[in-house]
Amino acid sequence: MVRKFVASALAVLLVAGLAACNTLQGLGKDIEKGGEAIQKSVK
Image 1: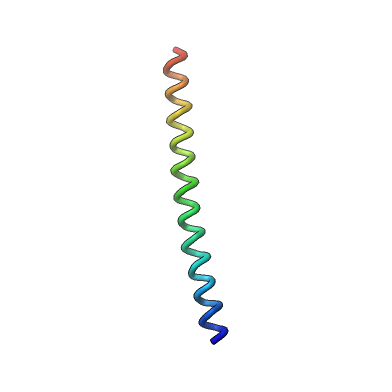
Image 2: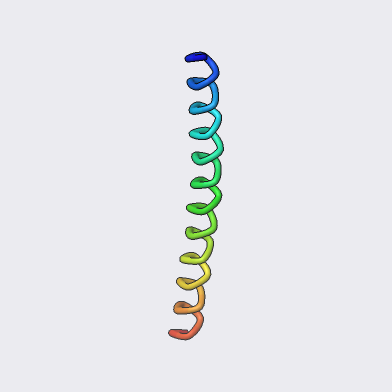
């Protein structure tokens, strides 16, 4: 029973970690696009 709980907890953490990576990657792309827009408006 303890093994099932530990396995379930690890699976949840793995999925949460992958979701966080996708979120941060998307945030980085948004920031990059914002920076490019600012550079274009300055030129």
